[in-house]
Length: 125
Image: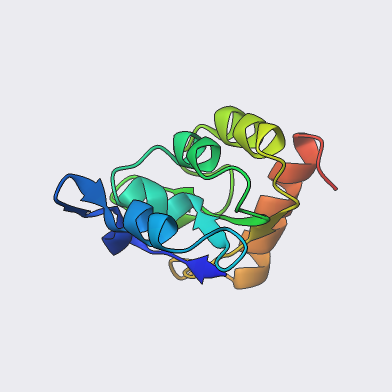
């Protein structure tokens, strides 16, 4: 599995580094773990990327993108979660994992609870 960050959204000869990596390795050799925050920070729509790489993303990392590029609890930033959830379902993503790299000085357990509460309110257990 390959987990990207924002730098893989840079383009070389008109193609993102992530697309180049995906093209160079078959899905059987290399799966992708897409990360909603890093996609957005790299200037790419997370839902569109999930759809683009369908069939090779068994899991995605969920974290929200706040104003000023801060990492936020899921549902606390400005990502389009309805589109992300629909793309994940349509693309047959098996797992959506909350990954909270930075809590901006807040208690990590409060951040996790906030993400959990948001996901539960949206029909996930």
